Length: 233
Image (cartoon, rainbow, N blue to C red; front, side, top):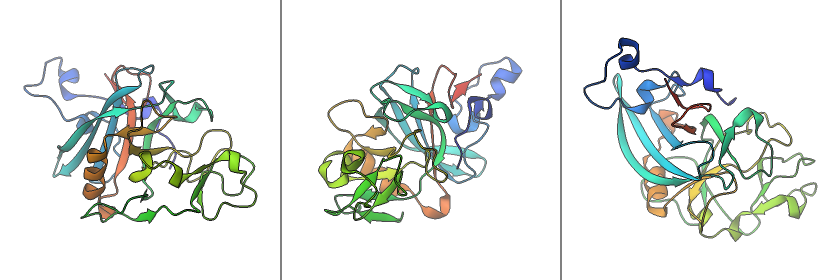
């Protein structure tokens, strides 16, 4: 699915339209122009584009409203966030936008209760980031002959980060070479990411046990201040 630009995902509150403050906080998904059309949504929000930390919250749609199911501190790219449609590979930036979540994967077994499609990481599991490969921005098992080892992630080598993960559909369905590959929601490492979104291990396990295929979950990545996929009016 294509990234959603700032104008398409601008958050508009009824309070802003009326010029009055709401009696209680409005759930973030209700302020968004688009949420992906499903009944589950993950929001990953940083204070601004230069931030490397923020908050991930997961939500369930119940009738006409959204109810928070959980929340955790998040980490973003070492160089902050940038609009997904203008991102360049190798910049250590997290792409903003609204994306689907094709499937989960992990070195460790899926948490109990996980219903989402889950792929086990094995010794010959790679994620190809080689712009010249037919497997660009794809799981490659074994590593494709045209995907150079220096241009692919050997997934099992990231025992902490890829213990549990979800593939983020950035540049995935119709990959643009040079825009970026291997953007995931995964477990925290030692610091900021190379462009992914990360959360503590217990939060990642909770998210995997929560996501449901039939609910068509999406992730919206952006900032509180605007100029990205999530903006407040």
